[in-house]
Amino acid sequence: QVQLVESGGGSVQAGGSLRLSCATSGSTYRCMAWFRQAPGKEREAVAAIDTSIDTRRDSTFYSESASGRVTISQDKAKNTVYLQIDNLKPEDSDMYYCAAGAYACGLWSKYNIWGQGTQVTVSS
Image (cartoon, rainbow, N blue to C red):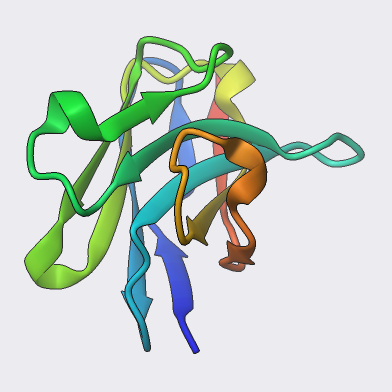
């Protein structure tokens, strides 16, 4: 049974940066992703990574709505996936969730294992 544990969220001022972490335990999944969700709204994909590929260019996927200020990466040795968010803006404020899927990393509907989320709050 895989467990996903997010960390790294917090309250920051606009213009700052955060690096969210998702540590996996129990099992490893090929596809790891980050989603965001505001209260009362649907969960929205941000980025995904195929952990079986080492070359970053070929292994990452970004949603159409993702800003150019986010970067997904992995540390295989630590079984951890990261989401770097730079130049934070108030509209980045949301609960961010880590997710895992077995295949088709670029298909957001394939993610079916979720962490508990980490809150990001950006003040202007």
